[in-house]
Length: 126
Image (cartoon, rainbow, N blue to C red; front, side):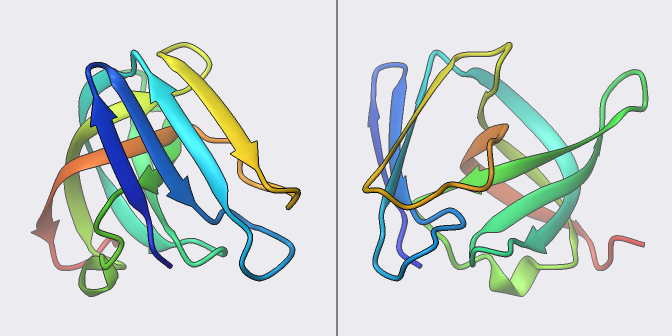
């Protein structure tokens, strides 16, 4: 899966396939005014061929997951490892997310994390 990221000021646009029902479909995700974060969690392969950061605990120990958006989609060597990611998050409370699709159904609804930098900090998630 190829993912393209364009950065302009506080806007981030990415072209990704997210749970599309037909081959060759394109979904565009735009995160505007997202919050810059540093998150730690487990990198998992998404059902759509992308990647998801799971087991991310907040200050109240509530667990969260984030759909990753990146220009470098080859995180395969870090799948099932504990990672720390720096980037911008967009969800209902931080930033504005616009999802445009060429007719394919999008199953994942976010939140999305635009990856600026990823570091493996553990050899397993367990």
